[in-house]
Image (cartoon, rainbow, N blue to C red):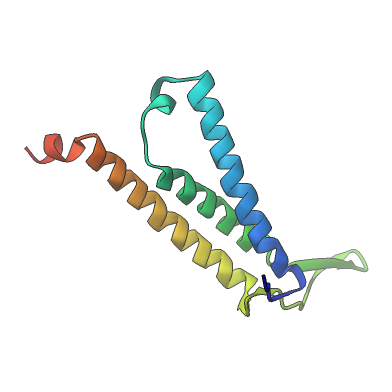
Length: 121
């Protein structure tokens, strides 16, 4: 498998994997130990959307590199990219994918539980 990255760009799939797996683990723990709302049957797109949203925010916040020069924080001009897409833009792409997946998961969950019939009738 070929991964094309520059500098910190290799962290993008790491951020994504850690965010999605952590979201799934927390969801499983809440479903098993707390119950109630967390034990409801909801779409896995919601978990994927939350994980992608978290990883997009994490990527955007860590996309710039800073160093200390004479006690002053200075931005270093490194170009970090993953598959030739700059890390900052990739963060916004992940945020968009996360929001779309989250909305889709909510829509699918509402359709599966009959919320649309009670909402429109």
